[in-house]
Length: 289
Ligand SMILES: Cc1cc2nc3c(=O)[nH]c(=O)nc-3n(C[C@H](O)[C@H](O)[C@H](O)COP(=O)(O)OP(=O)(O)OC[C@H]3O[C@@H](n4cnc5c(N)ncnc54)[C@H](O)[C@@H]3O)c2cc1C
Image (cartoon, rainbow, N blue to C red; front, side, top):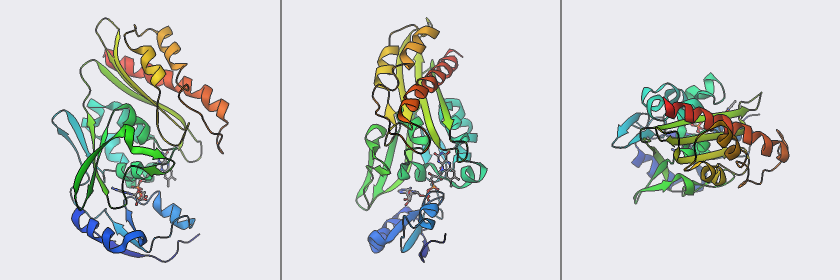
């Protein structure tokens, strides 16, 4: 199906994009990689009159170390994140998640900013960014604000971003020594989107005790969900196979999965415990090394 007719304007800076958003109001829509927006336009789920291209704004496609965190520009494509030495070194779960998004074409065009702004409940990056305790920088004409990831995803395809804001960068804290991160996903066989997924960040003492943990699960609600019961079960405990399995068994406790076209609620509830265990075990192994 073809999209409705639309206009196109290439922004040359974030400031110009903000001015264009103000000019076009509800008739304008930001375009990043287009791999969620264009399919939605083809299905006539969205029919913006003007696309405001962010892809022509310099300086938003990079990964750098900024103090104790990684700064990732909103226009950084999934393939860049998957192959970034900085990401792989400090938060391997993020590279791991970016590497299993869709296919090569999707990874070469789709952006981290577009993925989190779109907030598809079956997306990968929101889950891993939640486990990594990321924060997101939104810019409007009146300045910048930083939103904690726990406050960012508010509903299906809905975020804390205001209509007059552009997501410009994502900050991912560099975890302390002795920390491992990992992501595990059951993908839909056709699209690659998440059926169920889990991300883990585990800090381990030399003695083998867990000192900190953040676990998030995906595919079970309107967005990523912190598996708080699993986190609490791990903290202060020895990271044995039995303890990890017992903690992972609680991964669905905070969730109320909805049946969708991919899987039933009970199936998701069961499978997420398996994927939480895989993610925690891999994170613990990386923390050990
Ligand atoms: C065949 C296929 C398979 C896919 N498989 C997966 C998968 O397995 N896992 C997965 O997670 N995703 C998957 N995706 C989605 C893909 O990751 C998209 O690229 C991503 O969700 C959106 O990023 P984008 O840069 O393409 O954004 P766009 O499509 O350009 O934009 C998406 C939305 O975000 C808004 N937006 C974009 N950038 C910003 C910004 N900086 N600030 C504010 N708003 C902004 C746009 O206005 C639009 O509403 C798949 C897509 C396709 C087509």
